[in-house]
Image 1 (spheres, one colour):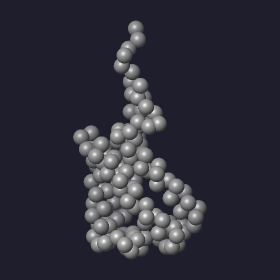
Image 2 (image 1 turned 30 degrees about the vertical axis):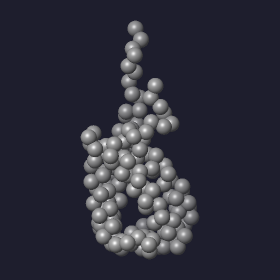
Image 3 (image 1 turned 90 degrees about the vertical axis):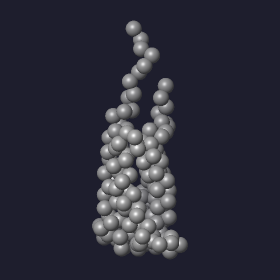
Image 4 (image 1 turned 90 degrees about the horizontal axis):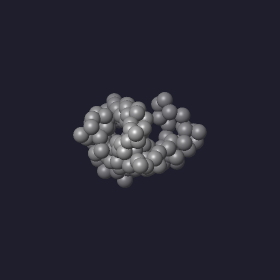
Length: 140
């Protein structure tokens, strides 16, 4: 007998994506707190209170990583991480265009090109794994 309710085949991939993204943002949050000078070097000059913003964003990344893997806060964490990914894009451009040397990151367009192109995917990833959007796999 056919069922009107079909299982959500995206549940497992979304959960994996959530944990991977949470780990990425937790690592980034730790980098903000432990190596703020490297991030300060790529922060555009028009950003006010840059050292304080780097510190606060590190705390937010850690809190967001926890929120992303908790059901009540997941949606909000996805929206916040998508917005955050858009907000830090200027720093990625500054890093690439100014050719700023950072430890453990190659200063090459083999890194910068894919990194800049991947930013919209991070925005989508945050929204998709948090259940904010279903695109391109719509629930039927």
